[in-house]
Amino acid sequence: MNAQSLHVALISETFPPEINGVANTLGRLVDGLRNRGHRVQLIRPRQDTDQQSTADADLLLTRGWPLPGYPGLQWGQSSLHKLLRRWQRQRPDVLYIATEGPLGFSALRAARRLAIPVVSGFHTNFQQYTGHYGFGLLTRAMTNYLRWFHNRTQLTLVPSIGQQVDLERRDFERLALLARGVDSQLFHPRRRSDELRASWGLAPDDLAVLHVGRLAAEKNLGLLVKAFHALQQAHPQRRIRLILVGDGPQRASLQTQLPDALFCGLQRGETLATHYASGDLFLFPSLSETFGNVVLEALASSLGVVAYDQAAAAQHIHHGHNGMLARPGDEVGFCEAACGLLEDAEVLRHIRLNARRHAGHLSWDGIVEQFEQHLHSVIQPTPQRAGPAGMVDAAVRSKPLP
Image (cartoon, rainbow, N blue to C red; front, side):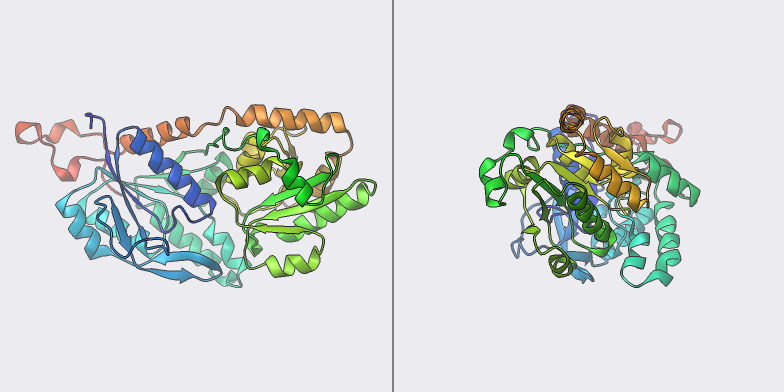
């Protein structure tokens, strides 16, 4: 490795092949860092696809507990002593802690004992989820914990400007922006499949309204139902079908409310990209996203996107140019924006073309480079306290932890 190469320990309770936005982002960051010559040690809970034993020096698996309401996802077990032993033997230059559960907490404690610099990522609005799952009284406690956690790291990376402003208002400190990219060669309109559309019961001039994501309470899917019904009522002459890609605890309820919708389950890779490209409109009613990677995937696939003016949509959609926006929480405005997309076929065509053009410039390479710079920024050596032979004392190799 060259002189600028880093030894990074990345700690997360979710990682590919698990399907969610956090796992997707972390997979891209890890691959990108490794491709740039950095060593990345991954610390995460064991998944069903893992072998019982592993000889990978850069993979440490821990036990995990099921996460209530999220089948297939886990909290990682606290592993303080295991991490201390490992990092005393071979000290990372910097940690990136992506999740704030027991595993992330134990990594933070170990790093503070060993004076290893820490960058954290604010990937999920857990403080909002408590209300959706019947634990509204815990919202303040969760916010306090998240603030306490992130303020004990040297830098917290957030995916959107809106998220940064919101956290600053809540007294989160030392925040920096790290947006998201999209694989615009994988998610591409050339993957449109007449065969797939025919299997959906659609002719070339019919409309496929797509939603991709977890079918769960925090995704505000009641509005998805309302918006689709509004489309049908506003354009009764058009054949319109709702296609849902993803799974989750609300699937059964949605199937009852939307008997004519198609539920395609979880999709990955090229198959997922083909589903995107075979759609026409993309409805994204969520109000709980820190970013929303699916918005970029839909834009790259040349769909007419309707979303609230926040997170990824606020950063990347210009209303009426490459998508449609509604004020956060304005359900009537959201439905009107969706219906407005179908008022003029030529306007929709231009919006979809502009969506693709915009997303084509959002590569992951630039995001990884920014991530690399953020990691370097917290481990700049302090020249005043260099020891013999130019060695810098471990306690001052980085900016002091708060």
